[in-house]
Image (cartoon, rainbow, N blue to C red; front, side):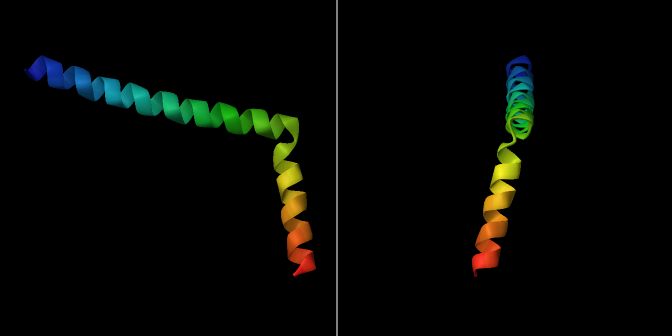
Length: 50
């Protein structure tokens, strides 16, 4: 039983690490594509209009 619970903990940790890495990669790709700049410009336009 102890061995199984340890494996479950490792699986959860690995899953969380993969999620964090996936989010980081996604953010990096969007940054490269200039998508973040596009969002910033849109936000600035909205602020100026208000």
